[in-house]
Image 1: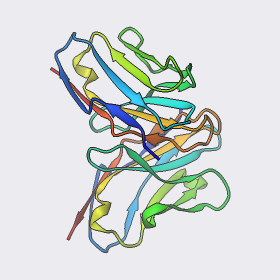
Image 2: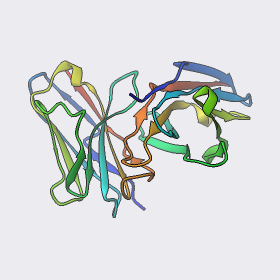
Image 3: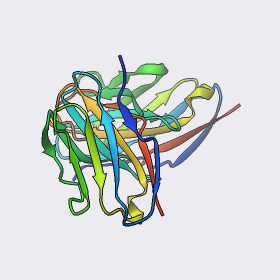
Length: 114
Length: 113
């Protein structure tokens, strides 16, 4: 089966610009996650969707970050305006449901903010 | 608050040697523990997970991990390392419901021939 797809793979922007990332989860997976992985750190959950509803966005900086999953399938994560400290790898993952399901990760989008 | 500590940032082992990567966790309830591996430019892949039962868990690629509640540890082991095992390894802890994982900072494994 196809894995989690993400695009773009790399993005370089200047601070105060906006950027968007796209994720297509594994077919049939109801739960989708966005993680931020800063260099030298483990991934940190930004937002979790169950179908098209938000389950947890407690660590999402809502003043600049937004995410949507309108049809319960693919998702976009947006940063506007970007700051230097947003430089990181943004990982998307999906699982069949919430609970003890294995999360499958995409390859990530590496963002550099100059 | 839950947290995961991986004390070793880098580890170098010789090919064929045994490996142990350390993981200590802090969690208020029964922990559900995971080990993931991340190769350069790739996403995380699940190696193994512990939910309950036998405290020695077998995973893919010949890895195993042992849950020790008294030491709050979940160390990853492999008896003989291959060059292809060079990667970054992450330990994570999560709740029984909700699937919100908290990751450690990772350990980078280098394998020398």
